[in-house]
Length: 232
Image (cartoon, rainbow, N blue to C red; front, side, top):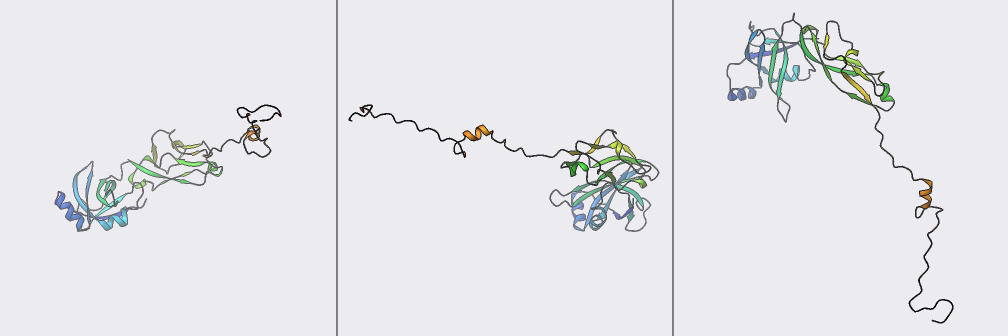
């Protein structure tokens, strides 16, 4: 995986007012922390986030570069983005957490899945249904995959790819239940058609072609009329 260089600065002021001024100056507040260091308040330019971080998928190794010259505590520190806070409407990044890692120590990260190929079950009318779009793996920070490719071309209807079926790069180990399904092909959804009327019912239906017209009931004689051919 390619390492991304991101320029950062220290920030001294804290509080809502300081954060507003920082954002107005085109910078995003952030923190740098890790198991072997004190938390440090830093800032990163909005342009750095937009051009180098916003498009990243999954976990990427990042090298922090102190913009104001070498700083032993901050310069060339290797980190992962652990969390970002975004504006609920615009999606703009409001805050970022950088987690420092040791390059010689294995860690757990989430890696996205890319499903490749057109499943045989989809050709037959089924629907590809991803169940998980990422998995957790354990590896060295320098060996984090950008994504994991999963070939689904042989997948038939009602069949699934499980965690144990996935081929991982050397040095990368999957974390979780090996029987966990990741993607499947569902049967096609067919809209139920109305049942055709039975021939007998069709023949008896009013107005049906060839159906006998209903007999018109004989009129009852008017009150006082005589039956037969007698005079009224």
